[in-house]
Image 1 (cartoon, rainbow, N blue to C red):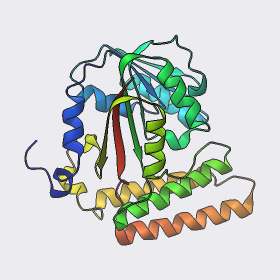
Image 2: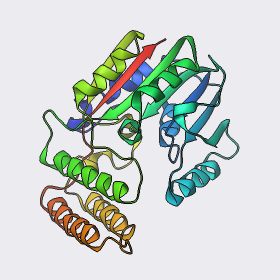
Image 3: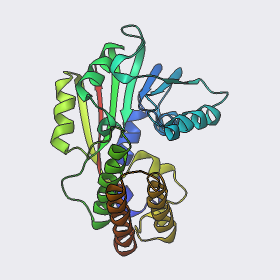
Image 4: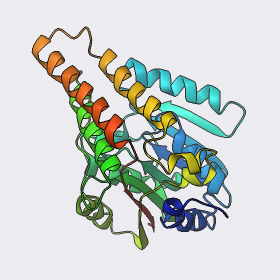
Length: 268
């Protein structure tokens, strides 16, 4: 992976990809799969795999559409998508060789319960993979804008009755991982996700103020506003819309960049 921009090259994305490239994952369970984005990442990076099962609770019509889109996207590949509550996984003990969850801890109503279930369905010596962004530590202004937007969208989801908590701290994520009592734990702290290594816009995205990022981030805010534009709570709706406009101003001033994250690989 030559000619990477400085920020990406100095991140741990390359080391994470290298670690994933040594894993023969077998049958993989992806919890909180959404559009199947992390499955796509693993397909690109794993040494080998047999099949994937992506599950999501799908609490909203939007999330149900995401799952249908994922099914079409992976049609013809050994990937299955199921609507399921991760607190009560409908699988036998030790059903999977690898279990993973990416950027979804903050969407869980009971994190400990989901982690216990994931470990239950993982075979002995199987791989446990976790990726989660954090909100503390040293972050650039553009990353702080991302955190600001995330906290705002969490309040929108809360207004709509959807579980969406604030971004976790690094220590909280570590505590969750160590509480699982896994072996061979490796934790990577990275400013860039592995997907950046395969993106055609890698050099363009190095500048958080680039026009493509600006337009996409602004569009994301506008789409979030549309979700509540007819909500009956006028006071809450007005306040959130005003906050959204301020976030767009921050995007224009500082740009937008994904918050840093921890990437965890361990064995049961």
